[in-house]
Image 1 (spheres, rainbow, N blue to C red):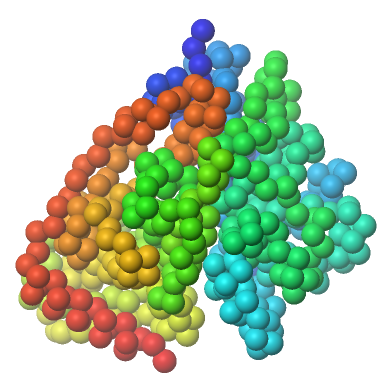
Image 2: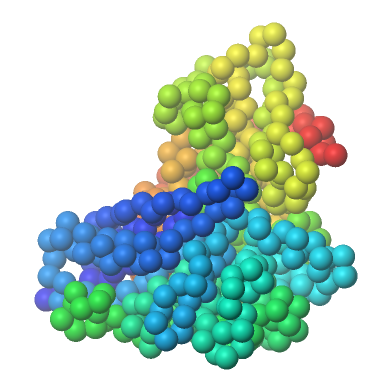
Length: 491
C-alpha cells in the first residue's frame, strides 16, 4: 500500500486540494473558485458554507484525478487565507454572518476610536501588529456590534469565532474541535505573542468574549480527525495547520533565522524567520509567529504589500495595455532604456513599510517618449521596488544579513521581474519548480508529524537562481528615483 498526504489550501479566490506521495512529490491538484461578495461600500465577504462545500468537493476531485485509493490517505494538512474571519453557532455550525475577508476595511472606525484613546502602542507591543481593520479583531468586533443577537449569544457561550482554518477544522471534525494554530492566532490582533496566549485586555478592548475563541494548538499538532462528511471509510488525522504565508515559509524550507521568502500574489507577503525570540520593528514591518512546530516557536518579521500581482491585473483589465500577463516580460525588455518613469501603485494607499492609507497612485517622470512598453516595465519594476523596500527594512530591524530571497507565486515565472528583483536587492533570488508553496508547507507539516516524511523532504525542491547583475551606481540611481516618486504620492 502507498501512503499519501492530502493538503487543502483555502485561499482568497478559491480552494485547492493537493495530493502528495510518501516521498513528498506533488502528484495532483484540483481547485474550485468561490464567489467574491462585494457591495457598493467595497465591503468584501465570502460564504463560509460555499467554502466548506468546495473543500469537500476538491478533496474528492483530486483523489479521483490522481486515481489513487482513498484508503491510503494518511493525514490532512490545511493552509488558509489569513485574517478572513467567521462567526458561527457552536451547536449547529451555521454561520451567523458571511465571512469578512481580510481585504475588507469595515472595522476602520473601531480601530480609529481605539487609536484616539491611545491603545495603538499597547496593541503593537502585545501582538506585534499595527492597529488596523485588516486584522480579525476589528472584523469580529464589527460582527458583535452589528449582527443582531450575536453579542448576547456570545456571552452565553453559544458563538464560536475564528479564522478560516478554525472554521474548516470545526466543520471537518463535525463540531468536535474548535482549534487554530499559533501562526493564525498571531494574526488576529487578539493574541499575545510574548505570553503565547489570548490576551484578556485586548478581548475587552474589542468587546469579544474569550469563550468564543479557539484553542491554540501547535502547527503540527492534533486537530482531530475527519472523514470528509462520510466520504472516507475511516477518518484521518488533521496534523498540519498554517496560515498561507507561514505555510509558504515552511514549504520553502526557511527554517533558520535570516531566511526570507516572498509570495507574489494579488498582494505580497514578505516574511523573514527571526528565530525563537521576537524582535519589534519601528520600520513599518510587523512581528508574528511563524509557527510552533516540534514544540518550538519561531517568530517572523513580515511586510504586506497591497498591489503586486494586482498591478498586472490593472494593466490588463483597467487600462488595457496588455491582453495577458505573459506579454509583460517581452514588453519590459523592449522598453527604451533611457526612459526613467516610475509607477507607484498606491491604488488603495501604500502598505509596508510606509503604511500610508492616504497615498495615491501615480506615474512619475513620464516624457513624450514614454509609451506602453515603458509603462509596463515600470509596473513590473514597482513590484520589485516595493519588495526590496520591505526586505531591506527587515534586515535592518532584525540586524541580520539576508543571503538570498526565496520566492513563489505566479509572477515568479516572469524572468525580467526576477532579475530586476535580484539586481535591486543585490542578492540571489531563488525560484522553486512548484507554485503551490502554501499547500506544500501544510502537507510537509502533516507528513512530518505522522512520520510519512523526513527532513529530507525539504531537499526535494529544484530551484532556478537569479544572481545580481547591476552596477552599484546604477542601482543607487534607480533607488533615488523610486524614493522620489514615493515621496511625491504621499500627502
